[in-house]
Amino acid sequence: MDCPSFEDLKLDSHGRNAIDDIKSVYDFSSVISPIMAAGTFLNIFLGNGFIEVSYSIYSTDFQVLGQAMKQIPAVSRNRIELIATQAALFSSPNWQQEQFFRAIANGCTLR
Image 1 (tube, one colour):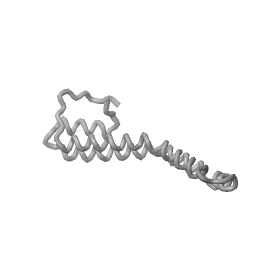
Image 2: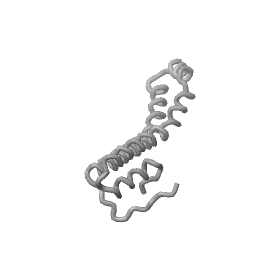
Image 3: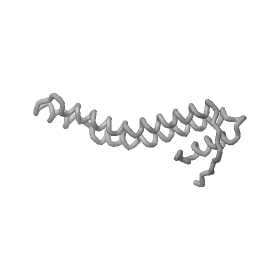
Image 4: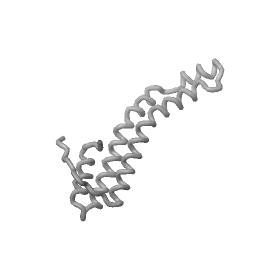
């Protein structure tokens, strides 16, 4: 996708809030995978004896955990697209801001 360039873009308060929301989703998605893995590891090994650890490893569905972790980027992208689309809809008086959020909703990234 060819992403447009925006010079001297001025965001209103709604636009700045949308950028903050997008950043929050991005930050959350970058830390959730390690937290999920660490939580599973701690659940299996922390404070358990050999028998409990063996049962925990046996009963943990690592395939489902892996599938859930692989879906995090897609879920995050859908959430960012929704935030950007809503921000574009509420930016109608500010044409440049509207185009900016439409570009984000269509896959352009913030740099």
